[in-house]
Amino acid sequence: MNSLIDIKPDSDFSLHNIPFGVGIIPGSGPRICTRIGDKVVDLSIMANQGYFDRGIYEDSDFATSTLNNFISKGREAANAVRLSIQNCFLDSNYSQPEAEFFQQNILYDASEIQMLMPVQIGDYTDFYSSIEHATNVGIMFRDPANALLPNWKHIPVGYHGRASSIVVSGTEVYRPKGQTKPADLSLPIFGPTKQLDFELETAFIVGKENTLGESVTTDEAENNIFGMVLFNDLSARDIQSWEYVPLGPFLSKNFASVISPWIVMMDALEPFRCRGPVQEPEVLPYLKFSGRRNFDIKLEVLIKPENCDEVSVCKSNFKYIYWNMSQQLAHHTVNGCNMRVGDLCGSGTISGPEPGSYGSMLELTWKGTKPFIMPDGTERKFINDNDTIIMRGYAEKEGMRVGFGEALVHIMPAKL
Ligand code: CA
Image (cartoon, rainbow, N blue to C red; front, side, top):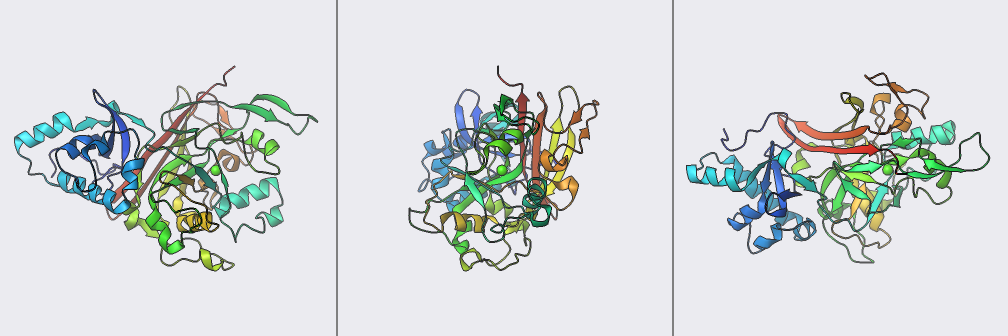
């Protein structure tokens, strides 16, 4: 029985989780925080109270607007902070003055706290690691008989994205404008995208740098990954299909992507390991790995039209991903590319095997040929102005739940 924080059984933020984020504490400013149940916990005050190892962290390390410095001290050190917080809030034997101090100085209602981007992202890479997604896209845009390109089962395909436009949950995003070429026209036209889409992804945050020229093996990779977030890689399909030949997506992707505000440590996800899909043909030696490297994380996408309840449009799972994060990081660095603390790597759209588990409107409505009817009677082939897109995700096992909360974005009409 914990008298300080009431944690509902279906809360993503159980005591097992203890994620890290940055929130604006009223009267103080940006502070490193965690979330337990419906409470945000100001860790700068806990640091001042001596809860964390002063041989590793200065008290002032928690009074900051990004987690980069905190993460750079290492995953082991961060996990020790996580365990200290767990122990502190497991203890229900607070004296009355202690409990009052906590209530008045450390705990805030989550609804009162504005969350910021948790890390300064230096570089952003997006993979394309779901075989179901790559197959669906290949069927729609290329050749149903040869949906996967010849390299797909040999290389964790990815591309370098743009970090400047990655925003935190709750941000308003304007419908992007650009060039498109409708099939019935011979020349391109300019205007707001008519095919705004989400991509259901997760992303990992790099926790340890490798020097230029040094490769990270699949055995070492997990040690270099700090934690995960939900990731909505917003996409403008009509802009994409016109611009992406031959170098891949550009303006169809870099107008905005959205992350959830709490970074869930890999240590919190440890109980939810599972096997991934069988990889056939056999991969090259540098991509081989041992043990279970996938994670059973349930994922959902909901659309909330203006003046209407939210509607679930997709239920998928991170466990479907073909190339695991260890392979992605090993591949990314195999040529000596240096990754830095705070870099973000998207999983690629996570589609499952069933139509209801496809991770984008492109697939769910099969290029707009099978539209949804929303409760307000409106039709959705893609995302409308004033829609809110909500992604949620959590892992659960034997009564233990570790979740991400939400990655939410409001779509505003294009700026004229
Ligand atoms: Ca993507």
